[in-house]
Image 1: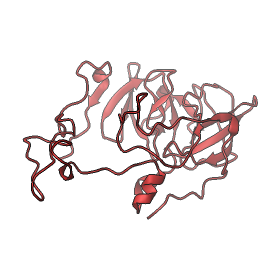
Image 2: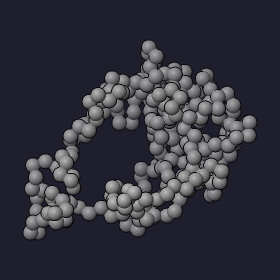
Image 3: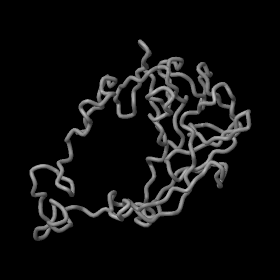
Image 4: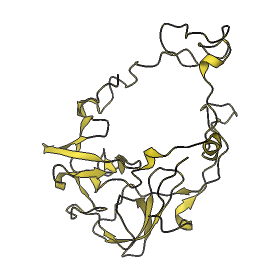
Length: 263
């Protein structure tokens, strides 16, 4: 069993005014039927209201605390603006208490600052990137994530994502400089079944261990092969290689290079 390094955390209790309770449904709908499997139990947690837009332009903010967030893999930072308002933001790597950050069209290229993509130099790493200007950051928000700025041309910025996909986004959208914190999160070893239950993850049963009535792979005497021509889900839908992206999705023309296939 391993854990992440929490040495950068400076506060154990969240800012009460920026939290709210989200009702846990254990994967059930309004009729009580399971619609999302493998969810339930887990420790009670409060949701932290994260500011993904950071739309207080030109007002410097000081980092007050760096905190753990139970609803996401990255760490978060509580910042206090000079006008007195406090907000939570995604904490970039190497951000420390006392640092000053700024959101502006021509903000300096410094870790934690947020600026327009067209003003970010080629080769720079950014995170929490807007797809639609003013819509808030949606690309690269999980622990250790970042995208690389490749080029600026004709109102668009070309970005290289972690999946090696290259796509275009409008260059008047905003992005934060740096890399998301807690970059070692993917190295964590859960270690035991009980720790998954603490996280609200219930056990997953193999299809081949079920009865024929419960799964296409079920039944048979002893260990049997799959018995179907193609991989299928519990509901008989073909999986493993079938395209799921909508052919007429609005952003398809902005993908310059698709991510390579994993063989």
